[in-house]
Image (cartoon, rainbow, N blue to C red; front, side, top):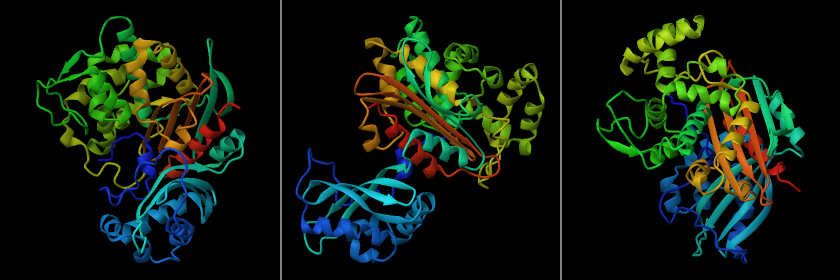
Length: 442
């Protein structure tokens, strides 16, 4: 089945071949003088992506072995479909004579690209990687307008954070609860932070697996009795959106405690999220008995849903339809999910900011920042980036906590739901990435 997952910049990779010979090396500090071969290959790149330069002539054999032409053409077509026609190289920053970072323009966006060229003739390209994408938008208002124009329903909020409530700077349907996928895991992290701040737990405390069934993830096949620290489990839940880690933490902390945190962090749609589902429970509601369990859940009130939890727990994982999500169609995203508004998520990130200040909050901030969710070029404009996102067919969310180099704090959240079709993830990531660029204080 297709699991809920965290949106990361890995989703934007054009090509990333394994091995030193095929991967663009880490850039050296500062600009360098480009070799003629590097300049030539950079100039040819737009034509290559338009199919006007032969794949076999452009790429070195090692690259071609790792990334077959068919795969390259497929991914290139996806990028063009999401971002419009390839236009031109807009800027180049050489890092060594044979490597560079560049901005590649598309009709609707700009890609951050790393390229490496073999210094030996015929100077073919050994590494090419897209590390980020930003939409074309001149202002935050333009980003909000483009989000609003997407099919389905969207919500967006950008706020400055301080000693009081978040101060909205830009918003579009910011108070509308929408499905958010794995971003619901932020509240589980918040309860863990609260309990550690209260002295009830420590990051080094160990959780012992009791053999309960788990959804897909790192811990799914681990034997009963295995032990892992809270820090490790929480990091996997946030940085790679591990569903098994999520359900372990939800069970360990207690559903009632996590539900209580909904109001504490400022989720106005709290009632809609009770009972607070585990990922496995959500999969069972959508995939057991052709959705019959889910139909009963939708019709029930909160008390009725709580009464169903024991029944859900008793149904084996094998009862979940193995073809769940395979048809690429949204499934009950407006009735069986986790529902937060963009403003709810801004308040959640603000709570995490305020409750992770000082040395005691270093572990939580390290967890939040391990996967920044946006490309390194966009993230590099900020002193610190914390992130959690989520997706399901028809669902997309990105939520960021941002500290400017001035020390000021901001939060940015956006969601996109479409009950009729899957959403264009690359388009959404590009818009949210552009929002982080435009959010920079001047």
